[in-house]
Image 1 (cartoon, one colour):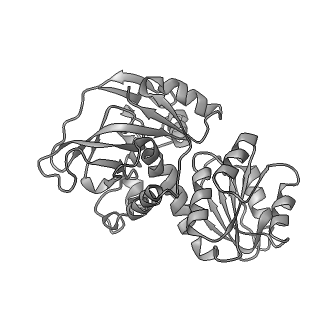
Image 2 (spheres, helix red, strand yellow; image 1 turned 90 degrees about the vertical axis):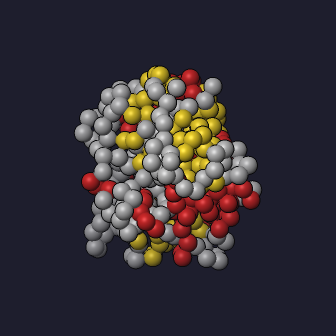
Image 3 (tube, one colour; image 1 turned 60 degrees about the vertical axis):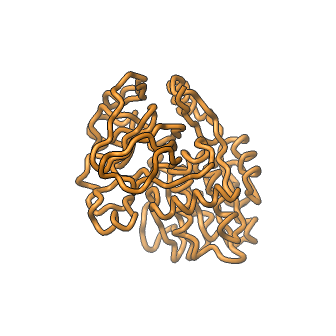
Length: 346
């Protein structure tokens, strides 16, 4: 079968032929229908040797949807042909968090040589992917695969980040989304579907602001010298109740802390290397709280899929054939992908 493989740290992935895996024990073989591509994949590809615990070679792709192709003799749960999305952040499987579906916060994550499917373990940018346990699979019914695959990270991570802020997002509140890309445009929809908050959006691209408006933002603006003032004006001057920063660089973190009201919540989801200096007294808003959400839980993925099947979520996608993976990676690296890039086996 064909697969997009990272053969060495710091090198571009290659499309190559590998042997189709055969499931053993509790393993499940999934025939891939679609695999999403995100900036985390660029971090994996570009990372120097030793920066991540992964040991190449392995197949990339951590946003995966498909159908059950074969079952190991001890696999329990899914039926042949059932359409599923993969829960991606595989943990040790034995700790208290993993056994309750919170593999994203596995107690032994630091001891593992992977972070999940396509992140140190063979992933879904291939014709087939081997899943170690059926518990990592969530049924999708008739949801299109190109919608389901990105929801397993872009949707789940956004949902998990918002779930941690929902206590602060009641009637009369305001939430700001910084970065309206693959995750941000879904965060806007999730905020609109699950909270009564007014949603503000910020990006550096005009086309991203158009996407923000299409997906339900009440107000959208470019990052400029007066952006903080413009956002505060939308709140009557008091500041926003919660900021979701899907970029995470120095500029966006500075903006986030400038617009938060006292007691506000900041969730930093993006990994662009920005830093906050925590000092008391200092420039951070009094009572400010920070969260660093990572992916999401398996029950939350089922909730995301249910939202999508209800019509509340729609992923803006650009499709590429699996053989077009180099073009997709190039477009993503140049910031030219609208919404989420999705690879479809050809």
